[in-house]
Length: 286
Image (cartoon, rainbow, N blue to C red; front, side, top):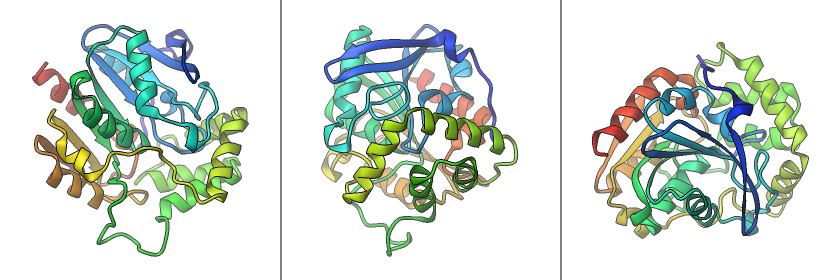
Protein backbone atom coordinates (compact mmCIF):
# COMPACT_ATOMS: atom_id res chain seq x y z
CA UNK A 1 0.00 0.00 0.00
CA UNK A 2 1.31 3.42 -0.92
CA UNK A 3 1.59 5.84 2.00
CA UNK A 4 1.51 9.62 1.76
CA UNK A 5 2.40 11.65 4.84
CA UNK A 6 4.37 14.76 5.28
CA UNK A 7 5.11 18.38 5.80
CA UNK A 8 3.76 21.01 3.43
CA UNK A 9 4.99 20.76 -0.14
CA UNK A 10 4.73 24.50 -0.82
CA UNK A 11 6.16 25.64 2.53
CA UNK A 12 9.32 23.61 2.02
CA UNK A 13 10.03 24.46 -1.62
CA UNK A 14 13.00 26.57 -2.68
CA UNK A 15 14.66 27.69 -5.92
CA UNK A 16 18.37 28.02 -6.60
CA UNK A 17 20.42 28.87 -9.70
CA UNK A 18 23.27 26.68 -10.92
CA UNK A 19 25.37 26.94 -14.08
CA UNK A 20 22.86 25.02 -16.21
CA UNK A 21 19.69 26.74 -14.97
CA UNK A 22 17.27 26.91 -12.05
CA UNK A 23 16.88 24.03 -9.62
CA UNK A 24 13.73 23.50 -7.57
CA UNK A 25 14.10 21.65 -4.26
CA UNK A 26 12.65 21.13 -0.79
CA UNK A 27 14.64 21.87 2.37
CA UNK A 28 13.26 20.57 5.66
CA UNK A 29 14.69 19.90 9.11
CA UNK A 30 18.12 20.28 10.67
CA UNK A 31 21.08 18.09 11.50
CA UNK A 32 23.27 15.95 9.23
CA UNK A 33 22.34 16.42 5.57
CA UNK A 34 20.40 13.81 3.60
CA UNK A 35 19.76 14.42 -0.11
CA UNK A 36 16.84 12.65 -1.80
CA UNK A 37 17.07 11.94 -5.56
CA UNK A 38 13.96 10.89 -7.49
CA UNK A 39 13.48 8.44 -10.35
CA UNK A 40 12.91 9.08 -14.04
CA UNK A 41 9.19 8.41 -14.56
CA UNK A 42 6.77 10.82 -16.24
CA UNK A 43 5.49 13.34 -13.73
CA UNK A 44 8.21 12.41 -11.25
CA UNK A 45 9.30 15.11 -8.82
CA UNK A 46 11.16 15.11 -5.54
CA UNK A 47 7.85 15.47 -3.71
CA UNK A 48 5.97 12.79 -5.66
CA UNK A 49 8.80 10.31 -5.01
CA UNK A 50 9.41 11.18 -1.36
CA UNK A 51 6.24 12.74 0.03
CA UNK A 52 5.90 9.77 2.39
CA UNK A 53 9.45 10.13 3.73
CA UNK A 54 10.39 13.80 4.06
CA UNK A 55 8.62 14.51 7.35
CA UNK A 56 9.87 11.35 9.03
CA UNK A 57 13.49 11.78 7.92
CA UNK A 58 13.51 15.50 8.72
CA UNK A 59 12.81 14.70 12.38
CA UNK A 60 16.45 13.56 12.55
CA UNK A 61 18.19 15.12 9.52
CA UNK A 62 18.28 18.13 7.25
CA UNK A 63 16.48 16.76 4.20
CA UNK A 64 17.11 18.28 0.76
CA UNK A 65 14.89 16.76 -1.93
CA UNK A 66 15.84 17.94 -5.42
CA UNK A 67 13.97 18.12 -8.74
CA UNK A 68 16.80 17.21 -11.09
CA UNK A 69 17.23 18.95 -14.50
CA UNK A 70 14.61 17.56 -16.86
CA UNK A 71 12.03 16.95 -14.12
CA UNK A 72 9.58 18.89 -11.98
CA UNK A 73 10.08 22.63 -11.63
CA UNK A 74 13.78 22.51 -12.51
CA UNK A 75 15.03 23.58 -15.92
CA UNK A 76 14.50 21.42 -19.04
CA UNK A 77 17.39 19.34 -20.34
CA UNK A 78 17.88 16.64 -22.95
CA UNK A 79 19.85 13.58 -21.85
CA UNK A 80 23.00 14.79 -23.68
CA UNK A 81 22.88 18.00 -21.61
CA UNK A 82 22.31 16.37 -18.23
CA UNK A 83 25.01 15.74 -15.65
CA UNK A 84 23.11 15.09 -12.45
CA UNK A 85 26.27 14.46 -10.43
CA UNK A 86 27.67 17.86 -11.43
CA UNK A 87 24.32 19.48 -10.63
CA UNK A 88 24.28 17.85 -7.21
CA UNK A 89 27.76 19.20 -6.43
CA UNK A 90 26.68 22.71 -7.44
CA UNK A 91 23.57 22.53 -5.24
CA UNK A 92 25.58 21.27 -2.27
CA UNK A 93 28.13 24.05 -2.73
CA UNK A 94 25.42 26.71 -2.96
CA UNK A 95 23.77 25.37 0.20
CA UNK A 96 27.16 25.12 1.96
CA UNK A 97 26.75 21.39 2.58
CA UNK A 98 30.20 19.85 2.79
CA UNK A 99 29.17 16.20 3.17
CA UNK A 100 25.85 14.43 2.84
CA UNK A 101 24.11 11.09 2.73
CA UNK A 102 22.41 10.45 -0.62
CA UNK A 103 19.20 8.46 -1.04
CA UNK A 104 18.23 7.63 -4.61
CA UNK A 105 15.38 5.79 -6.28
CA UNK A 106 16.00 4.19 -9.72
CA UNK A 107 17.61 6.96 -11.80
CA UNK A 108 18.39 8.71 -8.53
CA UNK A 109 20.15 5.54 -7.36
CA UNK A 110 22.36 5.65 -10.46
CA UNK A 111 23.23 9.27 -9.65
CA UNK A 112 23.88 8.41 -5.98
CA UNK A 113 26.35 5.66 -6.87
CA UNK A 114 28.17 7.83 -9.42
CA UNK A 115 28.35 10.68 -6.89
CA UNK A 116 29.83 8.41 -4.23
CA UNK A 117 32.39 6.99 -6.65
CA UNK A 118 33.52 10.34 -8.06
CA UNK A 119 33.27 12.50 -4.94
CA UNK A 120 34.05 10.26 -1.95
CA UNK A 121 34.98 13.28 0.15
CA UNK A 122 31.45 14.70 -0.17
CA UNK A 123 29.38 11.64 0.80
CA UNK A 124 28.79 9.89 4.14
CA UNK A 125 26.28 7.15 3.20
CA UNK A 126 24.43 5.89 0.14
CA UNK A 127 20.94 4.38 0.10
CA UNK A 128 19.43 3.06 -3.12
CA UNK A 129 15.96 1.73 -3.94
CA UNK A 130 15.37 -0.19 -7.16
CA UNK A 131 18.92 0.50 -8.36
CA UNK A 132 20.24 -0.37 -11.80
CA UNK A 133 23.72 -1.64 -12.54
CA UNK A 134 23.98 0.21 -15.83
CA UNK A 135 25.95 -1.45 -18.61
CA UNK A 136 25.82 -4.93 -17.09
CA UNK A 137 23.69 -7.60 -18.73
CA UNK A 138 21.36 -9.28 -16.24
CA UNK A 139 21.29 -13.09 -16.35
CA UNK A 140 17.69 -13.55 -15.15
CA UNK A 141 16.02 -10.47 -16.67
CA UNK A 142 14.30 -10.30 -20.04
CA UNK A 143 16.85 -10.21 -22.83
CA UNK A 144 14.59 -8.94 -25.60
CA UNK A 145 14.39 -5.26 -24.72
CA UNK A 146 13.00 -3.08 -21.91
CA UNK A 147 11.36 -4.68 -18.89
CA UNK A 148 7.60 -4.76 -18.47
CA UNK A 149 7.77 -1.73 -16.19
CA UNK A 150 9.96 0.33 -18.52
CA UNK A 151 7.59 -0.38 -21.41
CA UNK A 152 4.69 0.98 -19.35
CA UNK A 153 6.84 3.97 -18.31
CA UNK A 154 7.67 4.80 -21.93
CA UNK A 155 3.99 4.53 -22.91
CA UNK A 156 3.02 6.93 -20.11
CA UNK A 157 5.59 9.45 -21.34
CA UNK A 158 4.09 9.31 -24.84
CA UNK A 159 0.53 9.60 -23.49
CA UNK A 160 0.37 10.83 -19.87
CA UNK A 161 -3.35 10.19 -19.49
CA UNK A 162 -4.69 9.26 -16.05
CA UNK A 163 -5.35 5.77 -17.43
CA UNK A 164 -1.74 5.28 -18.50
CA UNK A 165 -0.51 6.75 -15.22
CA UNK A 166 -2.73 4.27 -13.38
CA UNK A 167 -1.01 1.47 -15.32
CA UNK A 168 2.34 3.02 -14.36
CA UNK A 169 1.50 3.12 -10.64
CA UNK A 170 0.25 -0.47 -10.83
CA UNK A 171 3.45 -1.77 -12.45
CA UNK A 172 5.67 0.23 -10.09
CA UNK A 173 4.10 -1.33 -7.00
CA UNK A 174 3.09 -4.72 -5.66
CA UNK A 175 -0.10 -3.32 -4.11
CA UNK A 176 -1.30 0.01 -5.46
CA UNK A 177 -4.66 -0.10 -3.70
CA UNK A 178 -3.76 2.47 -1.07
CA UNK A 179 -3.47 5.57 -3.24
CA UNK A 180 -3.30 4.40 -6.85
CA UNK A 181 -5.82 6.87 -8.27
CA UNK A 182 -4.43 9.77 -6.23
CA UNK A 183 -0.82 9.13 -7.29
CA UNK A 184 -1.86 8.54 -10.92
CA UNK A 185 -3.69 11.86 -11.04
CA UNK A 186 -0.73 13.68 -9.48
CA UNK A 187 1.71 12.13 -11.96
CA UNK A 188 -0.58 12.95 -14.89
CA UNK A 189 -0.94 16.58 -13.76
CA UNK A 190 2.83 16.91 -13.37
CA UNK A 191 3.56 15.40 -16.78
CA UNK A 192 1.08 17.71 -18.50
CA UNK A 193 2.21 20.75 -16.51
CA UNK A 194 5.87 20.26 -17.40
CA UNK A 195 5.27 19.39 -21.05
CA UNK A 196 8.78 20.33 -22.19
CA UNK A 197 10.30 17.68 -19.92
CA UNK A 198 7.98 15.04 -21.38
CA UNK A 199 8.65 16.13 -24.96
CA UNK A 200 12.41 16.01 -24.39
CA UNK A 201 12.21 12.53 -22.90
CA UNK A 202 10.11 11.25 -25.80
CA UNK A 203 12.54 12.82 -28.29
CA UNK A 204 15.44 11.06 -26.55
CA UNK A 205 13.54 7.76 -26.74
CA UNK A 206 12.94 8.26 -30.45
CA UNK A 207 16.67 8.70 -30.97
CA UNK A 208 17.43 5.55 -28.98
CA UNK A 209 19.28 7.50 -26.27
CA UNK A 210 19.68 6.16 -22.71
CA UNK A 211 17.47 7.31 -19.85
CA UNK A 212 20.39 8.26 -17.61
CA UNK A 213 23.56 10.12 -18.46
CA UNK A 214 27.09 9.47 -17.23
CA UNK A 215 26.43 6.45 -14.97
CA UNK A 216 29.26 4.99 -12.93
CA UNK A 217 31.32 2.27 -14.57
CA UNK A 218 31.83 -1.15 -12.99
CA UNK A 219 35.28 -0.02 -11.82
CA UNK A 220 33.89 3.16 -10.30
CA UNK A 221 31.18 1.27 -8.43
CA UNK A 222 33.79 -1.16 -7.08
CA UNK A 223 35.77 1.81 -5.76
CA UNK A 224 32.95 3.07 -3.48
CA UNK A 225 34.16 2.87 0.12
CA UNK A 226 31.39 4.57 2.14
CA UNK A 227 28.59 2.49 3.69
CA UNK A 228 25.94 1.59 1.12
CA UNK A 229 22.43 0.27 1.83
CA UNK A 230 20.69 -1.33 -1.15
CA UNK A 231 16.92 -1.72 -0.83
CA UNK A 232 15.05 -3.69 -3.47
CA UNK A 233 11.50 -4.93 -3.84
CA UNK A 234 11.28 -8.67 -4.41
CA UNK A 235 8.48 -7.99 -6.89
CA UNK A 236 10.14 -5.13 -8.83
CA UNK A 237 8.95 -5.36 -12.46
CA UNK A 238 10.94 -2.31 -13.61
CA UNK A 239 14.51 -3.15 -12.55
CA UNK A 240 14.89 -6.66 -11.24
CA UNK A 241 16.37 -7.51 -7.87
CA UNK A 242 19.32 -9.01 -9.72
CA UNK A 243 20.68 -5.47 -10.16
CA UNK A 244 21.09 -5.04 -6.40
CA UNK A 245 22.43 -8.57 -5.99
CA UNK A 246 25.22 -7.65 -8.39
CA UNK A 247 25.83 -4.33 -6.67
CA UNK A 248 26.11 -5.90 -3.23
CA UNK A 249 28.69 -8.34 -4.61
CA UNK A 250 30.80 -5.46 -5.96
CA UNK A 251 30.59 -2.70 -3.33
CA UNK A 252 32.87 -3.54 -0.40
CA UNK A 253 30.91 -1.92 2.47
CA UNK A 254 27.37 -2.74 1.38
CA UNK A 255 24.34 -4.58 2.59
CA UNK A 256 21.10 -5.54 0.81
CA UNK A 257 17.56 -5.44 2.20
CA UNK A 258 15.00 -7.31 0.09
CA UNK A 259 11.37 -6.51 0.85
CA UNK A 260 8.78 -9.06 -0.15
CA UNK A 261 5.42 -7.92 -1.58
CA UNK A 262 7.16 -4.77 -2.79
CA UNK A 263 7.68 -3.27 -6.23
CA UNK A 264 9.92 -0.47 -7.54
CA UNK A 265 8.77 2.21 -5.07
CA UNK A 266 9.85 0.78 -1.71
CA UNK A 267 9.98 4.26 -0.17
CA UNK A 268 6.26 4.77 -0.86
CA UNK A 269 4.88 1.26 -0.69
CA UNK A 270 6.61 0.43 2.62
CA UNK A 271 7.17 3.97 3.85
CA UNK A 272 7.24 3.32 7.61
CA UNK A 273 9.73 0.46 7.31
CA UNK A 274 11.81 2.42 4.81
CA UNK A 275 11.96 5.49 7.04
CA UNK A 276 12.97 3.40 10.05
CA UNK A 277 15.69 1.47 8.20
CA UNK A 278 17.18 4.54 6.52
CA UNK A 279 17.18 6.62 9.71
CA UNK A 280 18.94 3.85 11.62
CA UNK A 281 21.49 3.23 8.86
CA UNK A 282 22.52 6.86 8.44
CA UNK A 283 22.43 7.74 12.15
CA UNK A 284 24.50 4.72 13.16
CA UNK A 285 27.85 5.99 11.84
CA UNK A 286 27.39 9.76 11.82
